[in-house]
Image 1 (tube, rainbow, N blue to C red):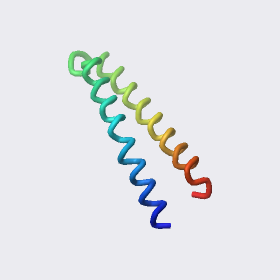
Image 2: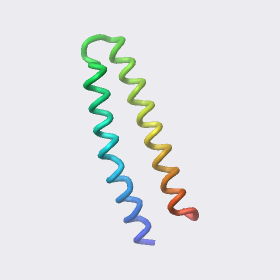
Image 3: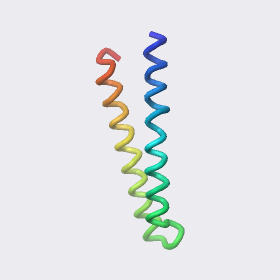
Image 4: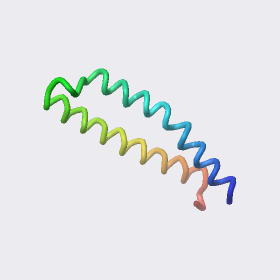
Length: 68
């Protein structure tokens, strides 16, 4: 049981790096500080990124550990 928790934690930590880079890229390209419209679009894109990341992470963990 302990090794499963460690593997899941490792998957989460490793997967956070590309998501962080994508988040920074979106922030750089959209420039949310320039206008309210850009900010709202950036906010929507950030929420979509968080939702997709969470969905894929849970899917990956369920695929790796079917009984978890």
